[in-house]
Amino acid sequence: MTGPTMTYLNKIGGAQAVDRIIEEFFKRMEALPEARSVRDLHQEDLAKTKGVMKRYFSEWLNRPAGISTPHGQTGLASRHATMPIGASERDAWMQCMREALRAVVTDEKVRSELEDRLYQLADQLRNDEEKYQ
Ligand code: HEM
Image 1: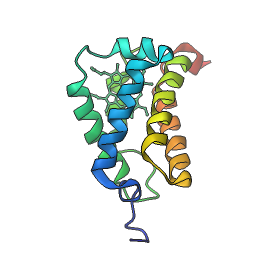
Image 2: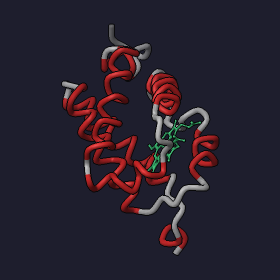
Image 3: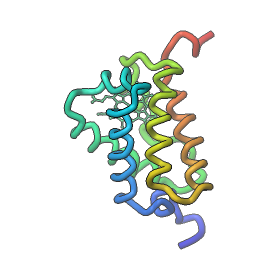
Image 4: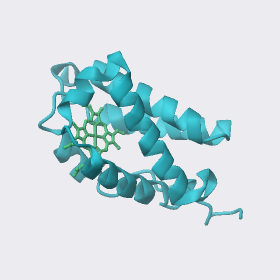
């Protein structure tokens, strides 16, 4: 499939690929010492969070190309507003996500585009003082 109907979700292999990305992501978050502080902000049992993340990512990746404002982004920001998110939390989160994408998304161009978009999104969730200086 080509053309404007081709979304990132199609490009990476559909909902199954999203499920794998989120599983790989949380595997990293459990294992990487750098991600410890981010892991500890989450609930002990990650099952519910994984489910919500999978649904959110599938919707986010299935928007037609060119629409850059993620649907429900305001909701995402308010969901994260109570958590201390600074540059180091953003970077730890991104490290887990980059490794997860590398494990699942084989097309390098698609992967680097997704990394860029997710970095922008993660940076928007930052709520430390540095952001407002
Ligand atoms: C692109 C960036 C991010 C996206 C798309 C994202 C997405 C999500 C989603 C969809 C949820 C589930 C919301 C719910 O349960 O209602 C969530 C929860 C959460 N996120 Fe993020 N997030 C991002 C970045 C971050 C960062 C940088 C941190 C670092 C602190 C973080 C920490 C958390 C925590 C602690 C929860 C709550 C999970 C729980 O209650 O178990 N997120 N995130």
